[in-house]
Length: 486
Figure (cartoon, rainbow, N blue to C red):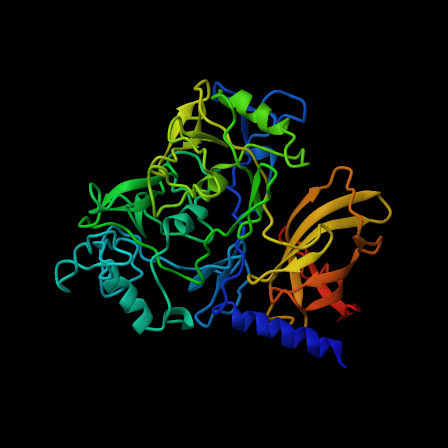
């Protein structure tokens, strides 16, 4: 059998199936890269054992990564100056591009960045008890009008565009961007107004707040639950499968979200505590046979919210002792006021910042890669991201965790290139299975790559390609592959 044909045909199968199958979706990193003390001053990121270790910037798990796409959904280089949509390489979602940010609306162009829309959802199953305000086609336009215009035009080659959920909107916030700038990556999402963007998620309180919908404030980076459905507000469309948390009670005081790959402390810490103590508590926690617990970052903590219910807004079958007050600390400092850190209130799912000296609730987390495989198995997910959890460099006694993303290059149509997007040093790895290896000539051998179908396994050799590795990017290309025995 020609293994190259196997690889290409299987690879093409994945590309085709991305639109039809709901894969596990990791939580993207917040993007925060600076560490802060409790007074809000920037500090050198602490090391294990030092005060304030375990804050957001100490970890980079599923770093945000995007790919520009043309009008047919083909990948473009990062340096492309014209593109139609953007793929989130972590979640696999594809986002609409905005254009013509000139403070003048133009409803003939649904992508005009200045257009605002009333919220309208005619389905009683999802509109929270109030459908909102339909557009009249002359003076007002609704979110339903907006989505219909994209789908009727087969925008980007697809007709399954929709409004994003509040979780999906939160995932594209970049918490490394300082106050005064729109908190989203400007390289991939230019022309983004400095304002609220509405989601498809209606307020769960259908008695008192049925006329409100959840939104993300790209000025501050937080979720807001009281955006009026009849208001005219900004929108950005998305396509791709929605993910929903699927929990597993591990019967040892921990709960695994098999969708995100996160393992949670089931109970709340015994006492409320300040931010510094919360960081220390999680880092020193020994629970379920694991000692690598940490305080969750803001996006991870938000992923635990069930926005379809309130009081509490969490799955109480798996987290029965969740308190509705005080809120729960995240490890993410508020870039607007660095003396504060973000927290989530599980009474309604809202979030706000608190002085780091405040005493709040704590729930620890660990993990973050959405995979049910053993620690050594490399995984190629539906967004064509290759995660190698255990890569050993032969000549340096160095072990790494690495991520690559498939990034085709029109100048080299016969190559299958992967761009390095993330790596981290593994401290004292103790895996029992064979590691992937990086040789002195920079060839990576991966003994087992599992495809998203959960069945297909192959071995792969990747060779470093200096011709493609320009502009600060590093590329490896597939040089050999074959079927995995047994």
